[in-house]
Each structure stands twice: as C-alpha cells, then as structure tokens.
Amino acid sequence: MGIINFSNVKLTDGFLKQVYDRNKNVSIPAVYARFKETGRIDAFKCEYDGENGIRPHVFWDSDVAKWIESVAYLIKNGETVPELEEKADLIIDDMANSMAEDGYYNCYYLTLEKDKRFTNRNNHELYCLGHLIEAAIAYDDATGKSKMLNCVKKYTSLVKKIFMEEKSSAFTTPGHQEIELALIKLYRYTNDPDYLEMAKFFIFNRGCSENDFIPKVNPVNFQSHKKATEQTVAEGHSVRALYMFSAIADLALETNDQALRKQVKTVFDDIVANKMFITGGVGSNSRGESFAHPYYLPNLNAYAETCAGIALAFFAHRLQRLFTNSLYADVIERLLYNGVLSGVDLIGDHFFYENPLELRPELNSLGNMHYPIPQRVKVFSCSCCPPNVNRFFASLGNYFYSFNDKAIYVNQFSSSVSSFSRNGTEVSIKQSTEYPKNGIISISYSGADDTLAIRVPSWSNAYANEKSSDGYLYIPVKNGDVIDLDFQMRVRVISSNPKVRSNCSKVAVSYGPMIYCLEQHDNPYSLDCIAIDPYSPALGDFSHQFNAFTIKAKGFDLDFEASELYFDFSPTEPKPIDLTLIPYFAFANRSVGEMSVWLPSTFLKKGGANLLF
Image (tube, rainbow, N blue to C red; front, top):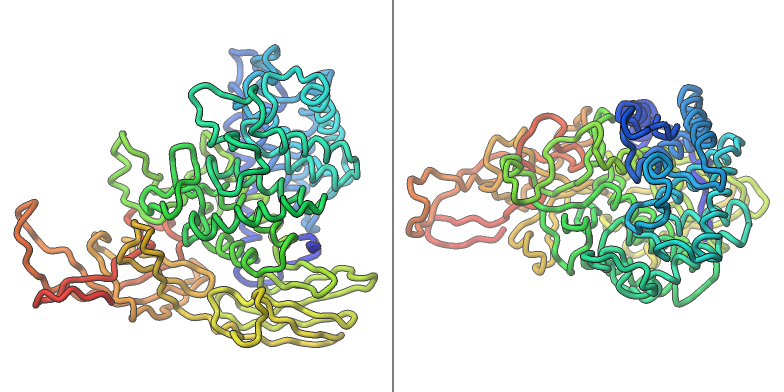
C-alpha cells in the first residue's frame, strides 16, 4: 500500500485546518522560544564549559531536531516561513561547526564527557541521532539544503564502524529506540542499502546481547527481555516499544517478511483490544511510562503520554501500508481528535506531557503518589512532546490517502484539495465537509477511471450493508464524479469491558470521533458524586471556543450532608441536575478543576432499588 505524501494534501477549511494553522502560527514559534530560553538552541554550539551557560542534557538534540523537522514540513507544504527557516539554518550551522572530526555529534557528550561516548546505553545518543536523521531528511527534501543530511550521514558512518565493525561500544542496541525507523527512512531517501542493514542490525540484536544489561533496570522496559522479532505483546516503555514496532513494520514492508508482518499485526491487536484508553492514549503506568497488563486502564493515574499517542499513530500508519483494514485509520482518527489533540491547549503555546481521563487537582499535593498536572505548561524539563506535536500536525496530510492496485483509499476527512499522480495520470480529490461538526461529506473526483475506497468510521452505523469487511465503501469513479455521503454523526453512550475495573458501572459519551468529558467549570459539583442518565445525552450548543458542539445531559447529584465518616446504609433520593459535557481535547483550558471522562451511571432510589440506567 502506498501513501499520498502530506505535501499533496492542502487543507482548505474546517476543524483540522484550524488545528494545522494554530500549530504553524503559534505552536512552532512558541516551542522555539521556549527552547531558546532553556538553552536547547544554543546548546548546538557546544560551547558549555562546565561553568558558563546552561548545562546541556543528553536528549536535547532530539528536542531541537523534531522542531527542525516540523519547520521542514511547513516549507514542504508550500508555507512561507522565512524566519523559521533562518532559525533552522543557524541551528544546522552550529551543528556542522561543532561536530567532532570523526563525525560524532551530541551536545552533551561533546561538552561534558568527550571520553565517554557510547558507554551508557540509557543516555540517548542513538535516539538523538535518529531524530537528527529524520530532521535532516525532511529539511533536505523541503529546502534542497543538504548540510544537515551530510552531517548525519557522516555520523551514521561512524556508528556503523563502532557498533557493527569494531564492536567497540559498551552496548549493542540503544536503550531508547528511534534510530531503527530513522535508518529505514534514510535508506528509502538515499537508496543506500547500508542504512537498511544497520536498521536490521539494531532490530535483530535487541534482546540478544549481554552488553545491553543495565543493573537494577527491568529489561522489559527497554524491550530487551527477548528478541525484538519474537515480541508479540506491547510491554515496557510505550514510546520505545512503539518506535521499535514501527521500525519492524517498515522492515516487514521493505523485505516482505511475512513473519514480521504477522508480528506487528499481533502487537497492534493486543494494544487496541487490551491496552488503549478510549481517547487513543497508551501507556497506563506512570512507573516507566509503560504499558501494563491487559485492562489496566486507570483514569486518575492515566499516563497516556502525548508522545506515546503520536507513536501509536505512527505505528497505525505503517500497519495501514501492510494491511487493508479501516481499523488503523480509525485509531489514527481517535488519537487525532482526542489523545493527541489534548496535548496542546486551545491557544497553542501550552502543552500536556500526560493526558489523564480524570482530574482531581487537590491530589497533586500528595507527594507520595503520582498524579498528572492539572494545567498545561509552556515547556517541560523533558520536553519531547511539544516538538513531537509540532511535527505531527505539520504533516497531517500524511494520514488522508493511501493506494494500491485496487483503489485509492480515503482514510481521513476534512475540507481539502489533494493532487497526485497515479499510474502516470494526474488525480485530484476535493473534499467539502464540516466534519467533525457533522458527518456529511462531498468528494469530487478528477482523473482516470478508478475506485475510491472510503472509510466508514467505526462510530458510524451508516452504510452497514454496503461497506466491505475491511471497513471501506468501494465506489467506482470516473472523471467529474461527485460522491455525497452522510455518516449520520450521533451522540453515543459507551460502556467498557467489565474487566476494566476503573470503569465498572460507568459510561462515556462521544459525538462522532470526539470523546467528551465533564468539567467542574460547567458543572459546579463534586464530580465523584455525579451520576449520568445514559439515555439523556443530546447535542447542545456549538462552541466557537472549542470549534465543536457541547453535549447536554441529565444527571443526579448523589452528594448529601453527613456528619459522620461511616454510618448505616439508608436509601437516598438523588437530586436531578443538568450536565454539560465538552470535547475531551478541550479540558483544562478555562480553569483548574475536576474532570471526568467515565461517569457513574447508577444511583440509589428511595425504596432500595438499585437502578442501572
């Protein structure tokens, strides 16, 4: 399956266009400003001497590299951003001027520990190189400027020499995966088979080398407990795992390895069936930022790192190339409108590292337990997420279309114009829609006779008798055809598997692709004491602040005054109340307060009857 490049997809209006523009105009400049303030930008000069300036960190290179990559995507999209391009050029100049003679580059090691290169597996050297490679490819492709690409090629040659030929490094595979998928991307860009062989080396040796043992660290968290190609469930650090499985999926595509294809499909199915929050977030355990056992999906302690959500979208995007199934686009949509979009505020300059499904701000004062922060911030000490958000939204068009000999697949929906070449002829697809305000979509096609395969979203009951078993509508088209669809977007009330203990007797509410939540800002109650009538949710007013509808519902306040901590049970009459739900991505934008996605749907009625709505 081929993918239509993001630069061939131009968003013209609507919700996602607003998201894209906010990222371009606010988020990317804001991240640069914070990185400049915190020393990350100037660290590329490698001038810190132990006393003067700001001490660099081992993974700062990766933060800045992702920012450069996002600028490259804007340029590739045809955006005029000379100030951003100039800033990127200066960083690349600093990198080129500071590289060691043999090609090594890492701002931490070049200034602080020159004699300890490749001695600490967990110090992110190869992770940083991976992000530098991805940025260099994107920048060369967008601008034609090859300075950064030449730098990373030289550095990569050094890595090959040290790790594969001399075997002189203290470890065999990196603690944090990333270089693997970057090397395959470099192979595709240059057609140099050495890079594919390097990717194979790091993938096939993971979990096989005694050099990779780190005392007092669980090897599962590094996916080093068994051979990488034998791992069939998602375990350990979620971002590391998903970058690794993304690389394995890339390798499966390049080599047509059926065993690897089966492996990555099995892992993805494990995540979606057992370990994914309703928002698309993954990584439920704050200890190690990791996957946990099946059905452990706590709301209050949900880690659900923004980077992990983006990494799952990367993984799903690769599975989309291996298998024809709308599941992968459904997961990307779930993340796009919920678990990733929540990682940035409505203005665009504050970010979340974690994306919980419940907030109780008073618990943050407890020092002995981990609870996510209740407000987004401009920068983190570990600030991997903001530039990851930058590059994800700058390349949104990547997720819209794919193709094979059978059809052109329409995977995501937004008002847009897309033009590309297929079988030697020009094709144009225009989408006109208010999605996700409603599910009405008009698709205009120009080109040779072909077939459009249009994804029917998993939340839609429309076209149940017409869609194929892979989740798509297959519609023959010829030049000038217009296809009008209505996915009949509706408010849904959702239950979870009873094995998810955090959600027992609770429901969640959605509208189309968006998950909704209660916030104390609109509902001045103790949310722990609120129950919802699950038959009542209905579309409310359209909020221009959220660019989405609110949802109105009937509920019950179960709170009542009591002078004692414990007392004999006595049935109580709940107080009827009106509830307002907002899209999950918009929580924590107006005030600090409680928030809940999953809401109790039981209450006690006078007479002792326990009613489940």
